[in-house]
Image (cartoon, rainbow, N blue to C red; front, side, top):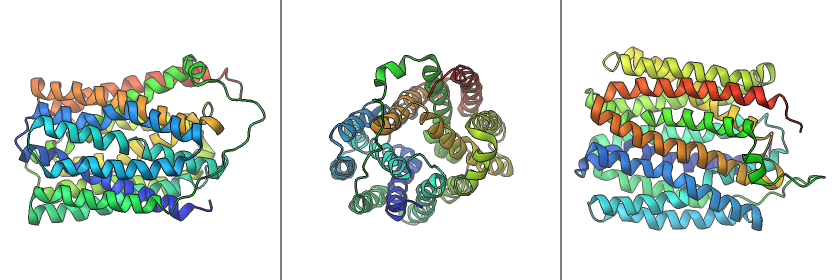
Length: 383
């Protein structure tokens, strides 16, 4: 078990408690402030758009100066200042500015923390899932407790809850210590050389398409459930159920990867994703169907994330650790998530809420095709 296992777990718990609570209920907050569905789509897409810029900036700074923990702490304070904007004003432009500042600084924190973890694990990912799951537990606990607060005190409570969680994240960052990077006998290939490889391009295309499909959940799932008559408590419970399934898979995933490997696990998660999105689209009024679809989150997020991180280590390790994680976040969640959110917002307006999840199923199928190409071309890689 890594020396800083508890500190990593605590930071991830607080970070994803904030990120989960805000992303789950922000659509309801913006709707309460009079924003249209199209405006909400644009505002929520800032979470993904800023992941294009933020992780790469902070990943470069952290790798170049080897001060990753300091970057985490400073980004936390800056994010808190940006978040204060949600307590004042009520216009689209005002909320847009606050979302930009907040996500510019929070977007780089998770990949830097994961890079620290990978450095301390020295390539042995046996305990990766058991530490990473604490981020999911933070999500569950916070989303569940916040649902009760919002039900009793109203959606105006949300900024106060989310701000408190940001403060706790900053406090957790002060427990972390920098980890010396692994020494390599040969210098790593330049990042842009790696990014020109067809197997790397196909890998990032696959992850971007998968995250684009998940924009149907991250951006619209709470609103989708509310429009179909579900209470905030049920919405929070559905999110918590999905993340609980995710936690269990993170905890027990090591034997699966030892037996089957990252490639087979990737194919499995993409197949499950297609089925999951079709179920959500077909059955908005069938609660048991939605419950089964939420349990599938274990595969479509946890299994996909771990498979992606393990595959990423083929190309980005050592001095490229933070930038590799940053590229994964920015290309997949940044470009993929933002384009997916904006596209699906327009689709919602023109074709209706249910059709959004049919489109998400198609995106997951395209992701599977790109993954197949990447793994086929990886067979010729030399490490």
